[in-house]
Image (cartoon, rainbow, N blue to C red; front, side):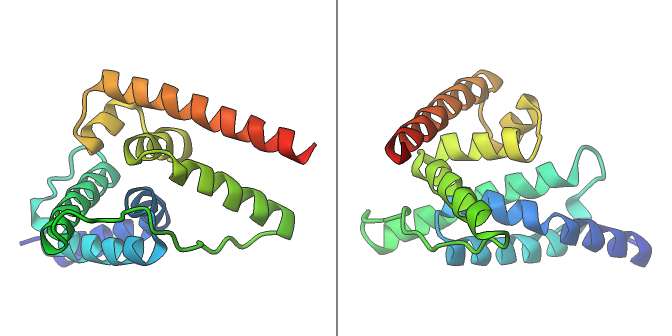
Length: 171
């Protein structure tokens, strides 16, 4: 059992990860409500299993890997319940607090990222938004580093093309 001070630090660190964790969950779930449920389940599980956290590496990576694993389990449960007809691309509009123009642009970019297949969106978020290394991203997602690099390249190219296409439409 962890000493009370260590448990307090663990919970504090977990709380500080919530915004990042929610963004990651949205790339997996594609729906704000499902993402929020996933984050809550991850936090509950992380606290219940905090004794398994050995303090090596980054807590963030441990929690992200747990999030990915729980989401994979959730998708499997949904497939069983609905005999394979799962729509993981249902979308809620996330709330972005900023000026109207910035909010519109941020919402547009977020939709573009979420329109990419899950593997591309998650890799893009972890590397480009959250600042994880390729190796850390590979460990979180349980894929080879080469796959991270390939997916990241594809995601960047797709996003650039979508942004270019969108700019041309406005002109």
